Length: 333
Image (cartoon, rainbow, N blue to C red):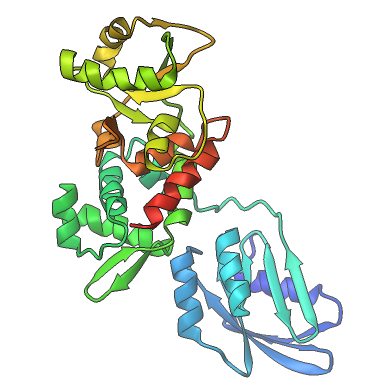
């Protein structure tokens, strides 16, 4: 029979050496350890999102006569860190926990938890979530700006209800802070890292090619072709990232082109499709949202810094380093 969280904590304490459980009523547990009595206040949360945990810690305040212990369905490493910093214990439904009061120190980790709360973030960050993507990209394009719900809905061209849903998700994960009557992004690096992890779980639709010439010459030819033949392109990956933050040397160009333009572009470049030895990767946009906030940088059409970051993250041969270089630029805005 499955134990409720209060009983699970009680059992863990009863099995701890030199700890006597004196009383438990569902909201608090009284124990004796090292000749002293301790009152443990149980703080129950329906979800262990960082925003929820921070609020519970703040609202419960420091209590001289109580040790605070959070009970949550699932506790991530991030939220566990918040508890440890605040001197608050925690326990999830799998029995992963940490309690530290008086002479007592109990730490259990590594137990598989079926309630891992990944679904919400996946539904927002997955490529199929086009509306969410537009909203998030609008926010990231001006990371230092304070927004009102109505302003963001207009800028991202979506409903107030959709904005409210995404705002709630960001609040749950502690990725926005309230400013006056609005809100703004915070902990950008944390959010983008999670986004890239989920976004890149699905591979890009790529056409591998070889084009004679050095990379700088090939990249400059894209702009000539755009002007002469009307074929649009958007540099990304190392090619795009280096336009924002010259960080690494690279041996392959990554560029978005429309699927209908691939063969025409190859013909203009005197290139060919290859199965190995490619120095050019045509990436087919899965949706026009990847082109949001694209711009001209150093006389080349380049995806937004956000898209360059997402596309660099999974690349081998220093892709992570390139992504971090782009992120450093984004943080200065």
